[in-house]
Image: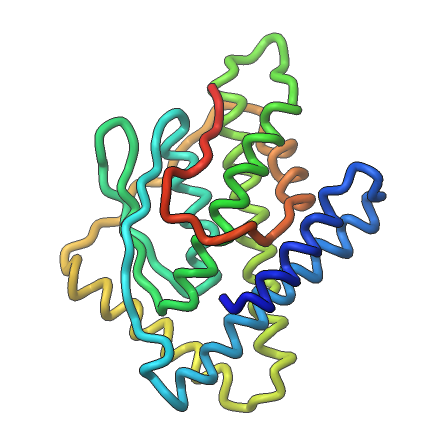
Length: 233
């Protein structure tokens, strides 16, 4: 992501996170940051359609560590899918190695967002009391599921809006072609990929996590290649 675009996103997030900011003001700043990131994705896609060398298909591996590794992996998948990236979950020690496939600019956006959202999820969980009659781990897993679901829905809506607002009649075909190329790349590496069974969660934190997902800032403070922030026990 360009420094100019990153600078704009950082400023918007700093305003949104200011304790003196009202909920309405915070939501407005957050929406603008989301819009900028989505618009960047469409702009890079259109540029690459004219000059493919500017944005090649690639892959990267992201390690997701315990605790709540499976839930963090779910959040990563919720971020990656709307941004036209695909991920494969592989067991790695006590956590997972998430193998991501996508165009370079989209992988960059996923990394940027996931790093920020992990921090926001950790803060949200820390500020949410666990009901006295519920197991803390079960509550937090369901909280994270609600958070991830809403994040995915918001990102998908932002991507659709950015494509519609681009003014380019060919943008839908360009984006569909990019998704197809990423899927083909994944199939080349994992020709016998299996879908994991649907998970059942017993906790009651889903609604609280979904509310936090609606408030979350869909941006980030930089692309990190080092250890990612964790979520406490």
